[in-house]
Image 1: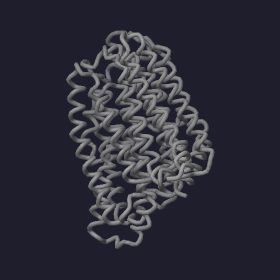
Image 2 (image 1 turned 120 degrees about the vertical axis):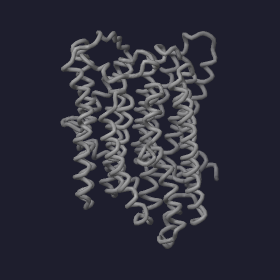
Image 3 (image 1 turned 45 degrees about the vertical axis):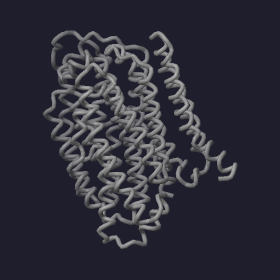
Image 4 (image 1 turned 45 degrees about the horizontal axis):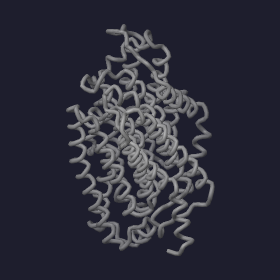
Length: 484
């Protein structure tokens, strides 16, 4: 590359470079003696994320471009989803301090690993080449493997990390095999080149079908879609609560960003091959997630199945396709980040130690002992259930509208029925908060950092419900640039 193209590439990937340098800096500072400095590492991490977000915002205002010989895309589509990633990671960092202190696991490398996972997710979002997407995915996955097992003295955390490593390696193998098949068929790994090469292929070729099958299997594992969902409940339950929230929001956003790019660009020529499979898996994912959550007694395990159900709803946006479907998925991911992280902040405040679990009964009588916190939890639960006027209602509404406009009214009806079923397990928590007496008064101390998380999540959940068309307009503009 010429010097000008090298400079352009470095500038375009500036946010990623900032986050990677921040991770290295935090890791080095964590080696300083004494525990007192560790709390400042969270502030440094959030500050660097804000700096990267500002640079991403500036890059989004320019014209879309591809750098590093076409392997890395900088456009409004990637910038929108990176803002979701920044939001999710910053809120996770802010809610982690008190939790780590409770679990006696205050270590600076925790924040370095979170920043590395964020960098991997950002690379996935901007990846315009199968190789760079895979590199980003592995950077994010390897960091999260360690974070899941971060509570080294807790058996649940260790068990979850081991399961996640084994199953994650298996899914990465499936994905890599699919990528290699596509490279063999098309002779290139860049998405636009693949699109052109596959358009000239015979779509009835068994090898093409096999390649699409392996690629989709690897990616759908990352979002927890049926039948690749088996890891989600165990890992969500055993991981530290802030990491569970990070996986639910940031991990899901990065994985769906890759799915959106590949299905809308790379595999659009093979739509006849993958559409029926994705439709079947979306319905099964919605159904299993909604029904299995009804019988859970652990709040994190319940939210794991809830996450599976939401993944099914997001897959419906993929099926709808076009700018409408793409924008509905992007808006859904933003709103899901607000409401999920908000509820996890409440769960962390109720936490009494990892070995005690997180029983749903811990919410009993919360409205009597902490009315304000219960009211916030009420908003987050209403939003997750899709009840107006919260953002969660419009997240689902726009996906359903995109489905209907694309001629899939039957799928929209099925989605509404499962959504109504899923509302019960959210309402069950609300009933516990407002209609039952607590077994013992909850001793809750809300730190300024967690208060900021709660207020940010609450504002985002309500604003997206009050001004949904504005947020949808931003998502549509970003989606149009992504498809262009």
